[in-house]
Image 1: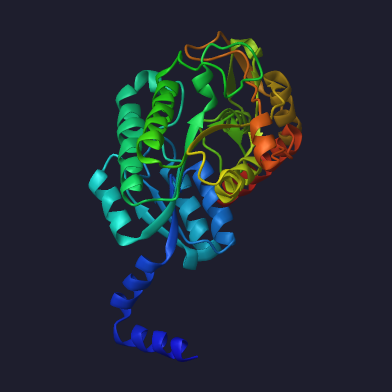
Image 2 (image 1 turned 120 degrees about the vertical axis):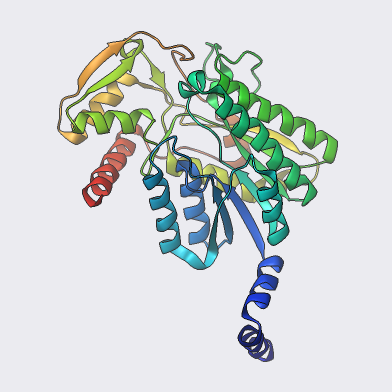
Length: 353
């Protein structure tokens, strides 16, 4: 009771000074890309559990800034007490250093990146700035701050031209076929080197075609739903002869939190570097995926079939045995449920906006 009175007394006398002291003592998880798709959902899950989160994002215009700002607004509505947002670009090292000075950051989950496979072909500089320079700034600051765990997003695109499926983490990924994948593979190599040099725990997550509510407008399901609703053609590459390991966002978030919570308990101090595939392990024929979208929208798609694009691959499938063996991971949401959930969200969001 005395401590409570003391806190209230100090807050009244020196509100800003005392608040800063509390923030400096409190442990935070830093989620980069918190205005992005996966970052938003992860932050949402953490703050619902009353975990203190610092969210950062540069709010660039790669896709709708309004959608990104709406995600942040939603996070603040869910639990403003446990969420603090800063607009910071990872390539701004001074800005990153200031965050680590201001807050006691004990966990970092890096989900910020310049995304998109095809966009990397026409805008290579943005990928080098964000995905390599930005990544290095963040991991360097994390090491200096003695962060307990550094988790970062990689991608299934690192598997390049490998045709043997499912893709296992043990496969040789030294031949990426687009710049986006090359930058993510570089992240894995930097993490490996720094884990070895500084006895620093890093975990890379190779995501496989993540989709769901609040998704990115440049992703297939968003493009398809948006175009079909607007009676526009949808561009389908490789004449629709693609298989993709579509992975629903809720399954991805459960995997990230399980790894974050349980990795050190399982491996103690004898392991400082790991890579995990996070996928559904059940690739879906693209034409069937489109049919499910048509069924939920009750609209027939106008399809424009096109040849295989540079940097595209025929089939993706995650080998998730390592994730299952270590943490009991199993994806729960099949693509039919996932498509319905996305279409329901899309209709609701754009009806209000």
